[in-house]
Length: 356
Image: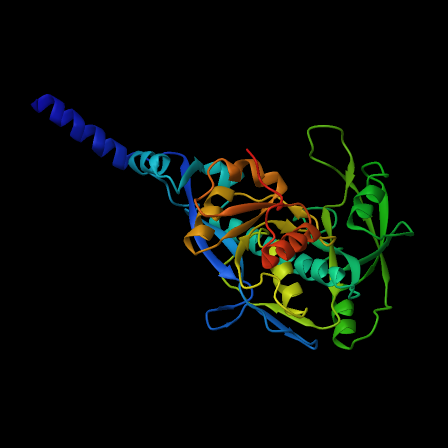
């Protein structure tokens, strides 16, 4: 008995002291995009008439352990057994040795982009014109473009060919062989910012010649300059989203719906408690997110009755749906608006369902 007891104590000590390469995900807080957070409205719109809303359109979040934290074996086993938590390999949340600071920065950038896309999708749904243009989103350190192009530069053309979409940039660059020159016609970021501030169109352009390098891809070698292209917008009125300490792109759908609700008479929800998740692009397409099981649990714990679920997350969400929560499958903002119409009218028999 003494030997067994000592062995048990040794195993428990080992379980507490030995780190394991896992991290934990758990339900995070939910925030009503129609309401307030930390004492101020989440959605603040100026320069356009807004309307009183009711009910909830809650965005949902997931808590994760930090990049520097290392779970021990006991914590991992407890997490595996806990119903509402999920233990995943550490590299799933922090791939390639990514630090917490790097992950936070990346999440902040994705969160900012999701807000922009939410605004665009909502305004397009309302037939409100939005001006858009292609910009340099990021410049890779040590690449040929470093010091030549800068984040925020507007890309008007590549080799004289007008650029209309971000994808056009890579397509035109890769028509070259590595080592060849490519000419970017740009509006410098500072000039663009000054033009926007003065409410005028930027006309000052310059040509920037960059010698392409070879990509590091394992497959076919191609020409690159070391930038990623994105889209920037000018809105006809001010829309601010005030929500700190949240990252990632998964609130896009709920932000878009909240903006739409505030800019239209009546209530999208009819006073019901609706939560949801999903990325959104400028055209209103809803994309999948991570941690869907955690988000449905968090939503239901706050009182949600319906959960707008990206179509690609439906199967995972349907495996273990919290009691009292109805999953509604959506693939576009139009799907979500149609579902909300049925929810507020009480005609919910034909709501699109999530199945395993």
